[in-house]
Length: 151
Image (cartoon, rainbow, N blue to C red; front, side, top):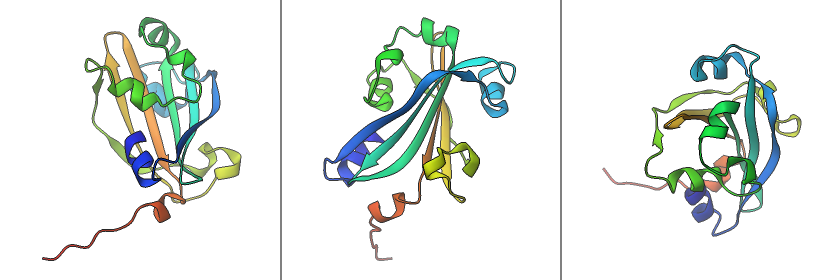
């Protein structure tokens, strides 16, 4: 995602950290991570900007024990891309993608809108289980230029 946004924005790409904190697990996150809803999770929420606009809202979730055991600098990412970190470790495996509409109420207040599609997958390595969800905001559309093909 980082590479595609950087290319599409002609090098104009940035990560805006909105929040990184301990928060209760939503029911959907708890089911994937194997914990009880409301259990404390490490949560990171960011906006991915390209060509001067926010294009993607991303939320990552992991158990506190998983973050501690990961051996990665997840807590120190700040405004750096999580994707670059994950894909720089060939021993981290990405599970299948799930695609769904994302509830507007789960988006940051200034970006709440209906009809946003999201994808999420579980990244794993040893004790690390990191659930990453990426939501494509309505500003995504103008960035993508359709290509024509001849049949």
